[in-house]
Image (cartoon, rainbow, N blue to C red; front, side, top):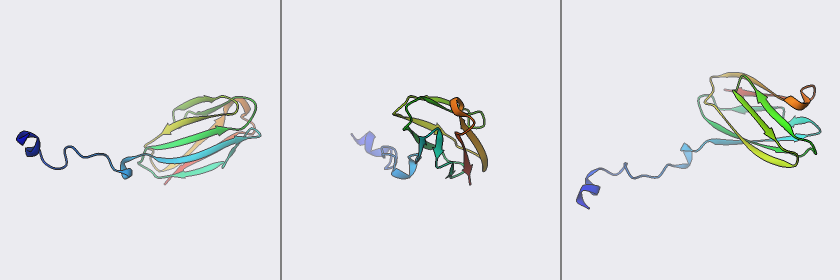
Amino acid sequence: MLALLAVGPGVLSVPTATALAQEFNLVIRNHKFEPAEIRVPAGKRVSVYVANEDSTPEEFDSPALKVEKVIAAKSKALVRIGPLEAGRYEFIGEFHADTAKGVVIAE
């Protein structure tokens, strides 16, 4: 027991809320992303929850973000990105690339 006390107060601490990834929400509706632009903090890992409200699947695809994720119809998925350098990172819905477009802006 004394050895455990000797290691110091910070060793057994639980991560704080500031250590958790910041969360963002996207919706796929009528083969479009809403919002079409999200701003995230540069240098931080973030979680993007994507809700597909359409009756067909969609693929969240971004070579710039190094992400490809199929989201089934009427379902939700989690996409983790970052940490990102400051800049613009485009993404598309690969199954409806003509309408499903968006951008992540890291600042």
